Length: 173
Image (cartoon, rainbow, N blue to C red; front, side):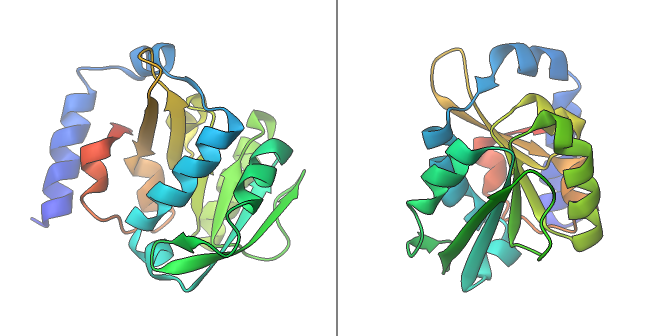
């Protein structure tokens, strides 16, 4: 079995011991500056995004996160550079490298779009990870940032993660 598949299986089994309800209760929404910083650091773990030369991010319903991410334009993300950050109240017209979901009311539309276009969904609203957004960030009870990874959503989006993500992320099914 592929090393990542084995690790994912072990972690998903461990996830049965820690229900999503407990994870939700312990993880608060990530403030815009933390969500943006975590996006720029962690998305490089996804092999396609991490290898892209130009990264574009579309932020759905979170102008504050878009403003923070815009500060990173021209800076490295994975092996590439952040080229553009766009924001809006609906799914994007042009396919971005990743889609940041900041509006829980638009999550279903964002996930349908991401599955159809095979792009990474990211959020600063931890509850959305258990609902199907692939990568989420939040703040734990110890006031430290948390990384959440939905393995089922990741497979549906056709993503290929560096196994090192499993050392820093809590997995959700």
